[in-house]
Image 1 (cartoon, rainbow, N blue to C red):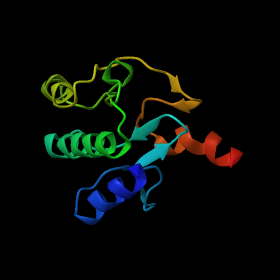
Image 2: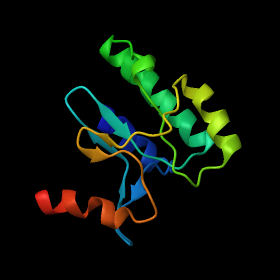
Image 3: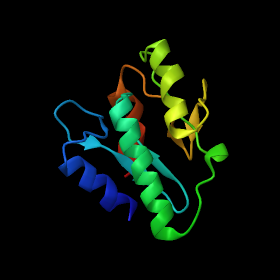
Length: 123
């Protein structure tokens, strides 16, 4: 359900995701058994889009998301006022330093390619 909702938003022109390698398609989300990582540029419109997706998932599943266990991670290039504005849209805290999450790098630096090389080699 989550993948379908995210793909529908992408088809409507909401560009979720980040490109790992130049000219490669965007990675918009990664699904785990009980976790989901969603990638997007830090704009109010895209964060509102994610908020709607989360509300639809709650309605469809009958489950409530635990926002206290959810986090936002921004790149170091994200402007300060954006970092202060967007968490309120989702009701999630910001994590300033989060090295890894489920074995994946949690923060995207300048070289996404170098960061994902090890993961790509394991696939």
